[in-house]
Length: 441
Image 1 (cartoon, one colour):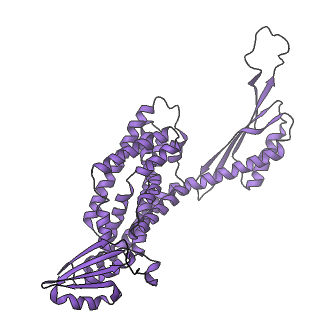
Image 2: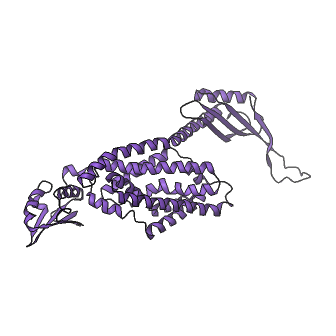
Image 3: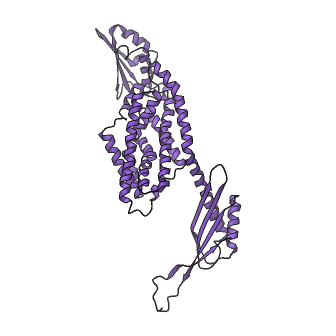
């Protein structure tokens, strides 16, 4: 519940109370008359606050004359029920939104220290493939606030909030990348190859895009309804924090492809989060209270959203391409496994399942693409020469697409009889790679 306290000159109190009957019930209004001023107390549900504030501001209250204060009310007796038209779309007033968002853009000790600590945890989780540490970093990361401020400042044409949001977010991003560089430099000589978590953040796909858009939409809904951003901030941090830290780690490890993928993913996620917030603000009619600014904001908002969408389409193209390649790779791995199950599994001496099934997809998503498959099988006997041809025909028949190269490697396993005492004792009973059979066209 909210209580709006309005102070106006004594002679205007009665007229103001009559005009308020249009937006609230008379039972929700208390008029305290004084000799010089009148105090009007309006108790409303949070989703009705914006309507009352718009009405008061249109009358010049708080700008030309009088003062408005908004306070929280824990409970009222009797209980005030929300109107039916307000139950579905709930939004607090623009003044409350502006007050809340201004606190999210403060570049202070808490913001910087929490960004540093969360970045350190994220870096340690990435290099160590530690999911628990990575989740812990997302919980304390304060990255969501500046993004909401950017969207709010753009929608309401509030240059002050927009500028503060850009500064706070730029500092936060710079801190995360530097922490990634520092942590990565310590692990540079101990990591033989990038961890699975580092590689995953450098391979953007459509799932990352959906997470970022959902995070932005959820953040916008929580913000306009007055709900805490703490929980949705975890989802946003999942899309932003590990990726930005991963940029620094990949750079110091000289993994340029991973670094490029992380940069593309981070830019795309930033655009999606901001765009999601802006769409929610637009739907919920988050506009500046002044009539002149309101007209200006409406004129520029559509252009801003169109610009963000165009940039998103350009940046997201590599992500869509990677997602298509992943789907194609999964399909051909499935076809290869099905073909081997039909033509190789029953052969005498074959050790199933295969040791390696690797698929490489080349080409773009619009034109033709190439497929290269490598299969390694363990066997105690050599396989017939027809195995290669049968396997390739089976895979192509399932995929309805030709395979550029199929590399079939058969590793022969030889067992040794240890019942007799040899002159030299072998350290192992089975010695692999004694014979390597490669079948090609």
